[in-house]
Length: 375
Image (cartoon, rainbow, N blue to C red; front, side):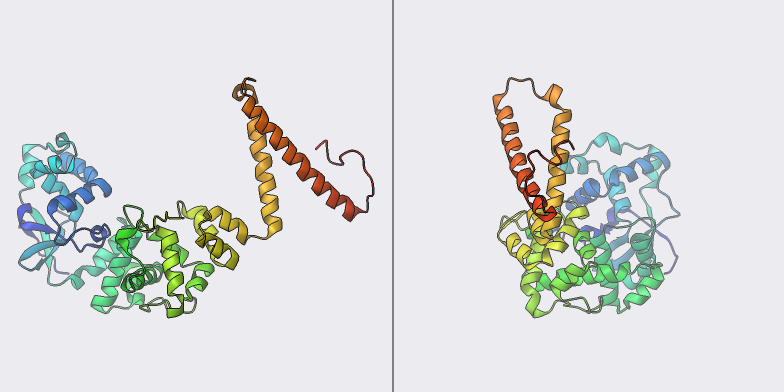
């Protein structure tokens, strides 16, 4: 990458709407500056850069990286910094986007410095990929997983660089590059087959890490039949698993048109619960019928394990309720007393049935009082 630095007016610099971090949000094409700045400000911490510039100015030793495309100076590295500068110089963005104009006030000296920004122009995007890849995939300024995957895909598919070389150049020793690339191929295959639409998901953004993390689990791999498929293969999911692919992505991300909520609220434990479900036919059918993830998970588990887990959870819940008895029950609410009576009856019936089984195994014919009643 050549090191000549040009100083360009911010008005002559354009955002890169194909930047992986920006395109993650399904922006319009071509996107207006207001749309891009809104995303960068509200989601990607532009405010902290504004505060840094107010205090110390723009650091010339970290120039923007740009490319001349279609008659424009496109900034391919440094879009957040460019957004901060544009906001400071044009506070009208605060009116359009809804942030505090007072944040944008800088000294005359800083404003003068911002009239020209340092830019290194490259001849083609490929010339800058190593620097950008290290910085944002495995370096100090990491992107989100989907942005990383898009960038890796661009390097692999457009520049013809192997995943091994990409991993080597950016110092990736954990096979992160392979995992991200495969996850994106699965998403793109589903989109091509019209089995998935990013615009239909329930969340405002695609939580891609749910998928690429899940694809490391055996259950997910088997559900899609990609266990022995190379990570760099396009369209990795075989035709007989297209229905599974559609189901899985709906469970992971939800669907607005089908009024289907995403099942993964937290990767731990939801992803492991979903893996257990998709390894069990009965649990999968239950999930398709609309039961909750936790209910489907219980179906997937051995019955003795589920019984013990529920018994212990009930014990913990009752112990917790008992700890709140003094302040939580004033003796006036009869309905609470009735709830307690129902619980007591269920507990009695459960214990009697369990004790009867235990006696039978022990060869005990008659026992008038409860054997474990004092526990």
